[in-house]
Length: 287
Image 1 (cartoon, rainbow, N blue to C red):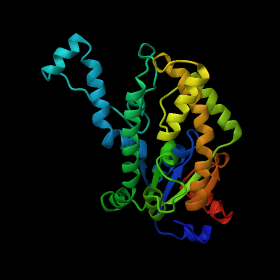
Image 2: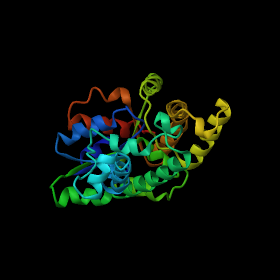
Image 3: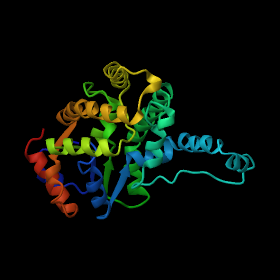
Image 4: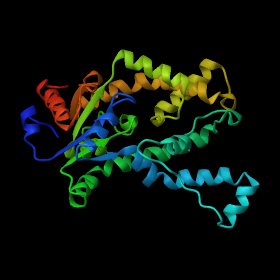
C-alpha cells in the first residue's frame, strides 16, 4: 500500500502493516505493542514453525529420541508423545532444526542436509508470507480485528527477487499491507555481530549466496567440509549476511514501501504513536 500523505494513512478505518528488517531493529517490539492495542499480530516465523515446518521439526526430535534405547522403546509402542512447543517468544525448535553445517561432534550437521533444510525453510517462508491476505480476512471475519500487523522474519529479503516488480511475494505484501523497513544503525550492526559471536544461531541464506559463502569460507580457512567448526562458520557467515541483506532491504523499501529508523522505535508507547511514526515516514517521502 502506498499513501499520498500521512493524513491519508490516519484516515483509513483499518490498517495493515508489514514490518521488515534485520534482527533486533524493533519489528517484534512494534508488532507486540500493536497486539496489546487491539491489532491482530501475524508472526511469519511462528506460522513457518507451526504450519509448514512442524512435521520436519517433530520428526527430527523423534530421530534423536530413537537414538536413546529407553525412549526408542516408548516411541515404538506409542507410549510417549513428542511435539514442538514453539511460540512467538520461543522460536528455538525452528532454529534448532535449521542447524549449522559442520562437525557433528560439535553440534553440526552435514552440509548436504543443511542445504536440504534450508530449501524446506525457503518454501515454508514463501508460503507463510503468501498467507498474509488470508489472515487479514480471518482477523476481521473471525476475531473482529480492524487492524493487522505482520512481523516478518529477517530473511524476507532472501526469498524474493527485489529486482522483479512482479515478484509474487512482494506484490502480495504490497497490495495488502503497508511495507515498512526498520533501518538499523552502524552501532546496531556492531552489536549484532558481537551478540552473534557470543551466541551463534542458525540462519537462513539465499541458495546462491550460501553456496558462494560456504566455498569462500572453506578456501579462506583452508578446511575440509567435514572439519568445519559449525559455530565458527555461523559467525563468519553472519557477518557476510549482514552486508548482503542491507541493500536488499533498501531495494524493497524503494520500490514497495517506506523507511523508519530503529532509533525512532523506543519512543513509541501505543498504537497512535505507531501510526504517527508511519505517517511521518510517508510525509518524509521515504524512501
